[in-house]
Image (cartoon, rainbow, N blue to C red; front, side, top):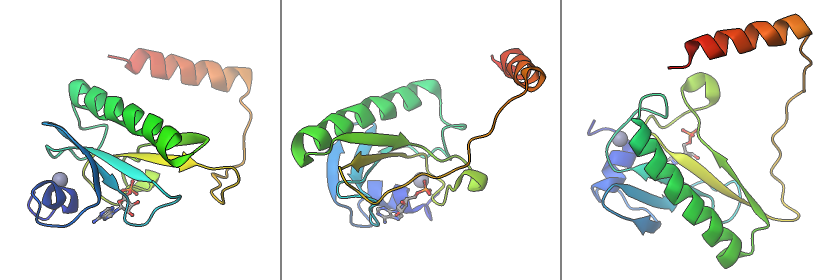
Length: 137
Ligand code: AMP
Ligand code: ZN
């Protein structure tokens, strides 16, 4: 996976504004921040996204995402955070190396996540619950 941008950042072949590193995880500023302090947390080992990464890796990455969340609140004066991971093109994933976005939120800021909320019928909700439950490992 030598073409992977984030693998290249891990290897030091591309520059990054690194904020955290341990044996397995790294965090650096997103190059096109949604808000100041927007940080990406990644496993050093390459996995495509959350659907591909083992549970232990996901747990480690989210543990660091929590640390970063606290740091942007305490250090940058953010009032909250959005913690997001995109998996596959349909969800807006552009870099196919698992990463979690920690997006600091300020009051006010210009970031909006917009969608039109829908309603379930009773039958639809029951059918969906049934399908999800029967697919849980
Ligand atoms: P996603 O849509 O979840 O795949 O987001 C990929 C993110 O990676 C985007 O927010 C980009 O701005 C960010 N990004 C891409 N290349 C770099 C880079 N070299 N350094 C830091 N962030 C990057
Ligand atoms: Zn990679």
